[in-house]
Image 1 (cartoon, each protein chain N blue to C red):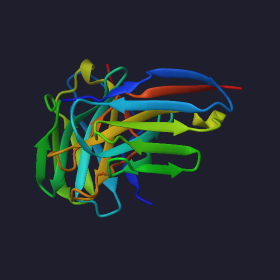
Image 2 (image 1 turned 90 degrees about the vertical axis):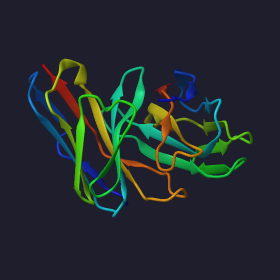
Image 3 (image 1 turned 45 degrees about the vertical axis):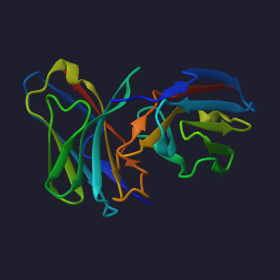
Image 4 (image 1 turned 60 degrees about the vertical axis):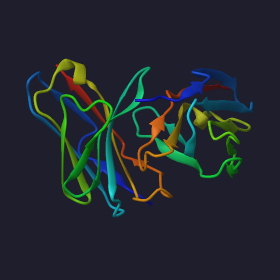
Length: 112
Length: 114
């Protein structure tokens, strides 16, 4: 199955810094989702995007659905230690109702 | 809040054993999914079900089967466990319909096959 290209693979940042990560694909997606996974736990949904160009915030998190529908971005502002984890993008391909394609994840580590 | 629960957080089995992983959701979702997650490979879809008694193969169905006898419950079966099935298994559920693609995950079952 197809995987989304997610970058960076990992990040080490200092507390208080802003973080950016993105997902790209050669295919068009109808939906973009961003999840966070803590160690030993299942992914938790952070943000869902349904329209090209849509910009949505959830607290310190902001995500955008790319205008071409082939990419999405997640920004975290003023990072804190509990932001540590793996962030996954997921997209629903046009014509594949209900199924999601996942990125390989961005591992975020925050130093004090 | 959607709640997806999985029967075990950790499981250790021997090669050749039959293994059952159970998943239950309490939000009346039509769709349920089983994934496995391995380092560097991300989440890979094993099987999904869009209705009771309905199932569809995902990307890596070999060595697995599933059962959905009730809407809220979706079981993953390893008929004869092998060491290469050692992995983290994640169950998810979602509403039917193209407007509802948000999948909600359980806490995962870390399976070790010796």
